[in-house]
Image (cartoon, rainbow, N blue to C red; front, side, top):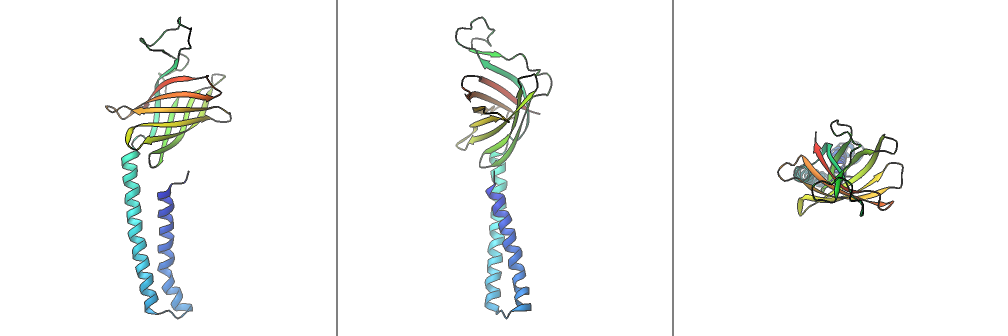
Length: 200
C-alpha cells in the first residue's frame, strides 16, 4: 500500500536535488542566462515550501489518526452461540461464549497494526489454527474519519481462501483497548463473535 505522503515527499526531494544542480551543470556545458537561474530559484523555493507543507500534513495525519498503531494482546475471544445450542455456557445474558482453547494468560496471540495514512491500518492477527498451531490473518482496518473511535475492516487468512469482516470500536476511556466484532464471510458461517485487544 503506497503512502501518498511518502511519495510526494520523495518526489519533492528529487525535484529540489535536480533543480539545485542544474545551474552548475548549465554553466559548465551550456550558456544559461540569469532569467533561467531566477526561474530555477523560484522552482526550488516552491518545492521546499511544498515539502515543508507535506511533512506537516503527514505528521498531523499520523498524530490525529495513527493513535492505535502497535502490538495488541488478545484479552478476550468469544464466539456467537449457534441457535439451538442452549446448553453452552453464555457470557451473562448475551448470545456469546468464551472460546476456551486460547491461552490468554500468555502473550501468544497478538495483533500487529501498522499505520499507513488517512486512518488506514494494515497488519497481521494471530489465531488458533487447525492443528493447535498459530494461523495468521492479514488485516486492513479503516478508521471512521468522522468518528475516529470506530471503524471497519477486513481479514484474510494466509494461504487460504478464508475471508471475513471486522467492525471495531476503541474504548474511549482506555484507548489502549479495541473491541473487535468479527464475522466470517467465505467460507460462510464458520466464525462470528467479538474479541478485545489490549496494546502491550
